[in-house]
Length: 111
Image 1 (spheres, rainbow, N blue to C red):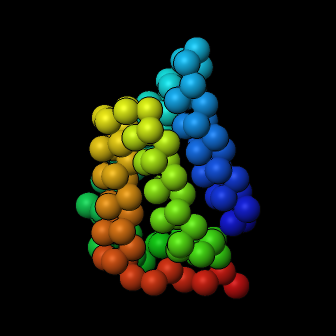
Image 2: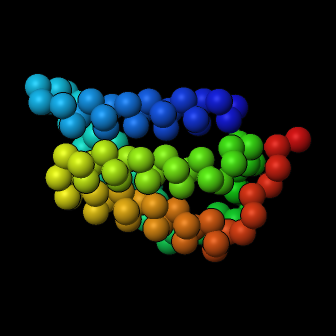
């Protein structure tokens, strides 16, 4: 199960990298759509984190540092392209992820 999460995130990172190359406008649109969706989902998760604690999904066994490195790489790629609105959105996603993790507490381990 955790492999699916990692592959999705790495795939998005590749698409972000492609979006920084001229003539890859399709990748830019994917980045915009995915980023908006992620911001909305993270806001809903943080606002509902107290009520979601009882139904928290099991940990996909991905080390927490993976997410931090992945978000940092995404932000670096977007900043290198001077796409500041997306940089701000990904910084917000990162912060909301940290807030959510601290509110909900340690995830359950997969059995």
